[in-house]
Amino acid sequence: MTDNNSYLSLAGTHRARATEWVLGMSSTGKEQIAVMFELVGGVHDGKHITWFGYFTDQTVDRTLESMRHCGWDSDSIAELDSLGANEVDLVIEDETYEGKTRSRVKWVNRVSRLAVKEQLNPMQIAEFAAKLRGKAVASKKKYGAQPAAKTSANGRQQSLDDGYAHGDPGPTDEDVGF
Image 1 (cartoon, rainbow, N blue to C red):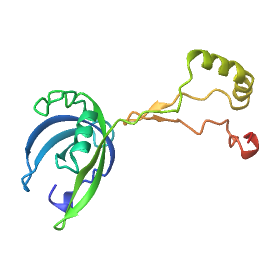
Image 2: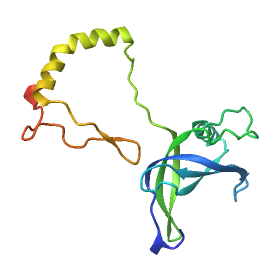
Image 3: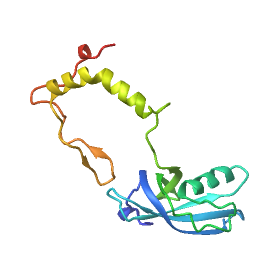
């Protein structure tokens, strides 16, 4: 990817899994880890990119955290066998250095998950469902059942259409009880 005429940007956030890794020394004499990631899903499925983590006083905690996100479960940096156990989200940015542009892994993050402050337990769900039953029935009568969503190449749900009956623009501000 050194020829900018054939450069393919990988900028964005991509699901990936570590496939190879090695501990080494940087050109400045600092310990580092190089991890080869394979992108999973999406238009870049199967492409590879390397992340470099450093063990300086300023970066060691984030490097270890990134390794944990990948699945590393040991207490010893000499034991890295579990490093590829988890998929991660890579934040990739383009950078230009000495006139050449390349994609670089900026962050290795755990896979995003849905989160709420407090998840309802089964009893709370049943009570809430009973409370909203009338509204749910009215909503189904007004908007009808929606077609099933399809799963895109990146694993995310996509709606097949806007979900409303032909000619119905959906709820308006007047429909929302604020």
